[in-house]
Image (cartoon, rainbow, N blue to C red; front, side):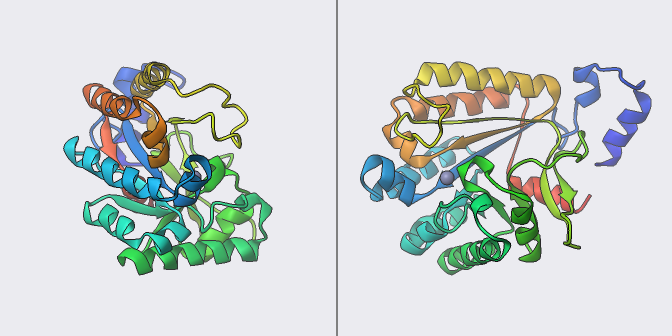
Length: 287
Ligand SMILES: [Zn+2]
């Protein structure tokens, strides 16, 4: 919460909604925010493309694209990927991207682990990434699209992390800018959890059957239309829009490179604040 949004709330009659006027400028002077999240996970690349090195090639190519379009991404790196491909993680941080954790092995889901095992996983992920690139992660983007429980948040808080992107807790402020402090039962230290208006999208592959809702083959045209539509919706409602992409999917999905380029340009045209989860978490932490 910042002074500007307090101000606007005060001037606004309760329940009155005029998104353009009310929401303008909440996001660092912009009407909405855009985050590109890149999940870097050679194990998934191996599982679905047959070759773990796909991740290496595709991540390097993606870093080139991000430099070309001048975009900083939030890269969620698997601990075991940091161990096996430390040079990739170094490239990510040297290029100025935000790095965060994405679990140690990508399985099982956090919700299937005890508190102690989840703490171990957070700790081990942080060490692996630190060893690879010298950067200490402050946050984790849970794998399996946020299959987490309250203990995942408690574990991350107890391990000293600042934020966790997992299942969205209830009861957090609806006007939060991406994150809000969340306190789990039996844990004194709060952790930042997803909060406020959010819209998202992810690339997909019909090879990945763990996502039961994805039966359709990848379609660049379909993704372009849908992702642009959701960006428009974020712009209209003053929400945070986050797009999750996977280097190995960019490698096998025909046309995905141009879709990413196109939707980032679209977000810029709509006036997005192009930011990272690290930046949003720092903002939430410092008030
Ligand atoms: Zn993942």
